[in-house]
Structure formats: structure tokens, C-alpha cells
Amino acid sequence: MTEGKDLVRCDRMTISTLKWTIDRYHQAVEAGVFNDVPVELLHGELIEMPPEGVPHASLSSDAGDYLRDKLGNRAKVREGHPITLPNNSEPEPDLAIVNPDTEIYRSHHPYPENVFWVVEYSNTSLQKDLEVKSKIYAEVGIVEYWVINLKTSELIVFRDPVDGEYRSRQTFTTGTICPLSFPDVQIDVVRLSR
Image 1 (cartoon, rainbow, N blue to C red):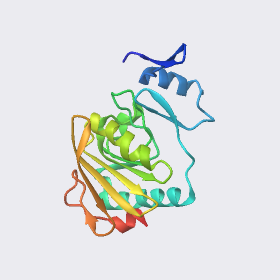
Image 2: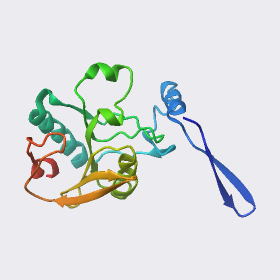
Image 3: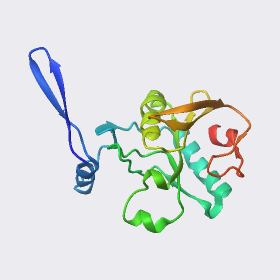
């Protein structure tokens, strides 16, 4: 992966912004550069993550437990940990439902081929989660992306990634949904969103 620079013109001055690569980002993380600043890497840019509110923390933690019960040993549910994507992104979704082979995660974070689906709980970051992150996940072929809108208690489900966009977007407030990777598992929407 190579580093790139974007040029921004401001009046008579040209400003060059540095794009981060996964390798450079990992070096900075290992050096402790971001120990006091919660950030994630999205398309080569460092994005500060807002602190979790009480409903966000409680609901995402409860959902992690619920999904573990539903999936058993068929998948691993990682809470708030990075996934490494080839588009110079390393988001930290609230929940990443991944291949249960934990041995591979001792040498690297999950790659797209290890991810069944990701879940974001969203309040102040709703626009970023619906617009920016949906494109990032679709670009790398993550087949399913769920966003819980904490303001409306809705589950927004993105599926069918094609050319960097999800072609399917559905909103649920009640009922059950079956993840694409586990069509025999019924997830209660209310258990995730309220």
C-alpha cells in the first residue's frame, strides 16, 4: 500500500494532506501515538471517534451477548475491535461477526474475507455510518452491514455490495431478520434496537 497526498488550494497557499496507509497507521498505533485519542482509519484519513453514550454502550454490549447466544461456536462476535480493509481503512465497528478461527487473529485483525457482517450503533455518527462507512464496507465486499439508529430504534440493513455501493437497503423496527451467512438464525430486531 502506498501513501498519497491530496492537494487542497486555499487562496494563494497550497496545502498538502498526508494520506495514511495501513502499515504507517499500525506503526503509529504500536508507538502509542493514539493512546489518548480514539481514532479509526477511513480511506486513509484519521477520524476521531465520539465517546459512547450510555444507551450506545449498553445496547451494543447486550447485542453482543445476544448474538453470541444465537450463533454459538459458528462465529465470533468482536466488540469494538478493528477490522483491516484493503482500502486503507481500519474501522472499529461496534460488533463484527467474524470467522470463529481465533488463531488467525493473533497475527492480524480480521480481513474482509473473515467478516460475516458488521453492526454499528449510531447516534451522533449516523451520517458517517450511513454514508461513509457503508461505502467503505461495500468497496471491500462485506456482504452485510447493519446500522442501529439509536434516535429512532430502527435497524437499517445494507446488503448486496456492487461497485462500492450496497444495492439493497431495508429498515426494520420489529420482526426478525436472518443474516445472509446464517439463514437459519432468526435475530429479533427489538432485542438489537431497544
